[in-house]
Length: 281
Image (cartoon, rainbow, N blue to C red; front, side):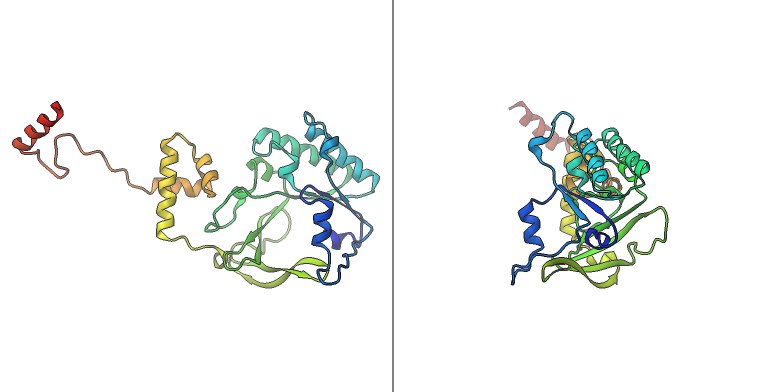
């Protein structure tokens, strides 16, 4: 996306994922060794940990992004990824404060921001929702549009793109009409090659009865240990609502009163005496 946009205007790409060598290998022709030619107006920036102030890491990141965008006359900023930049993205207040600072810069300079975030551990049996966004739900409120790239359970090299939030524009690519792509290393470039439109359900993993039972047992065990629904959902890679429904669907079996045979009436006197005798030992 940055490559395409940079053919028309300057783009600042803040890469927190790849080193120089990893980036080079990804965009090199495996047969000829020829490097992909990016437009000069695509400016890629890395973070040098040795020059960062650990105590004021997030504040320095914000300041450095502002300076880099100003010095390169870039009004389109792509940040990859938010999880790295915002150490407190799991905490609502801190994550919201970090995003607020970015939004202030956006409004101050008229920027367009594309912010990439990872999903936490999740099961491939459930559709992607806003609850799968890494970090606090408060982050979701800052975005005008949100789309997700899901991994297909049908094929390792297939990915599907799904619209999750649309504030302005048309909602076209929901769960019934996701865009399916195949990852291709074509020449000197890695790209998504369009395959088809499909239902998200076609690319989800089928949850077997044994897997559902295993999930339930784990959820019940974690609940008995005092974990919250949110914590259980994060541990199992499920949404909070799914965990809540799963636990509520299990009937509560009342304990069998002492001295009964589990059906009706009381135990015969002779058996009762035998039990009493054993308890003496």
